Length: 512
Image 1 (cartoon, helix red, strand yellow):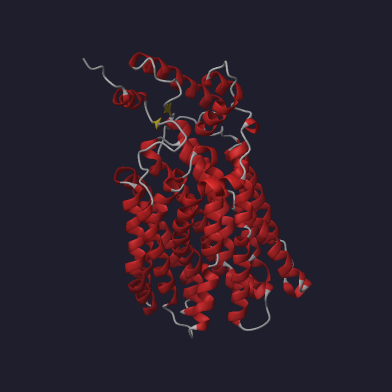
Image 2: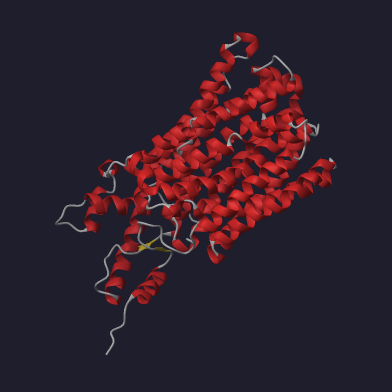
């Protein structure tokens, strides 16, 4: 997280007062420089407020993905607890099928929470998704095993996985929109990278707890009751995430958009913003049909980008531990330990990648990641196939370096594809359609393909290359958005001096 002042964190009321002071000071400067400039044409951000917003979104996202990652790292154990009949492959396939079930309802969650976030505000919906995810995960930890209640055990597992998937449908689109609309234009990549830092922290926490339990409890205790412990932690973590999110104000971009559509004909936009900033329900209701009819070209681009990104992401962060254990017969703890090391390295360089995307653009970084996966997938899996710890670590590192180019950039690139009035809804629908079709099914598809092709250990490499090729085409088709205002929102700058420079650059000098 970016380092801030050592002073006590300001309360939300102090945040609002700080923003008001920034606005008043800036308006005075703006009127001196350009009297005809509208007072709301530029937003001057308060860095303390931006950091608070990023922390809340990223830490809440970490807790969501901690809940979701637990299932991935306990897939083998869960298969034995809930699907004990048949071969080990059948049990694992059943477990991954249940993992994929949650992704089938993610588009429904995105279609519900996304437009809702465009109507009543980003903050309220993100708090709601936090509650649902925590409850769904907690309930999984309370389900009796198949040996106790038989058929109803996997039925309940599927039910609570559906609740998890539905709530997650509103998470990424809302969290990335939340950070993007708070961040200044020239630092959106840097601040956006902390959203994926939250994702990695969540996955790392889940993998670390599973590793600790596997090491200390042993196989028998894990099968009997140990697997429940990570799921039961979700309740307290959910309360922490909820507390962080409800303390924040709505994003400045959404408040400005809402005020512009709710102020009276005789009132100013600024007066309306102050009067209606808390009445998010006044915003026009967004219809899903409008998103599909007006944004369909960008939706297709979003689906292609996210599909390629998520196949590579879930292949490395979700499927790889199972691949090492089930296919290469590694000790489960060894596979998790290597993955933990990989994710630790990714977290160390993630914010640097975000800064690079601000400086050089989103497209160069995204293209580097996609090309990296296409070129390095086969060498990486050949190294992993060798089985020795140095070779496995080297293969994982090659894949991780390609992935970090996507992780550090995508959360800033995707929200910029859509205008403010439909950003949350459009991004949630496009993102979750792609994740449902391609991302969440990655472990299931790879496991099934390997079974079809006689345990060919290079299947994951070929699947990754296909996804990367689609990603290369998608990145080539997108427009550059680095250092530019979000569509439908005014320019956002970090300082008053930067605002003055922007005004001077936009001001046309008179000619004689």
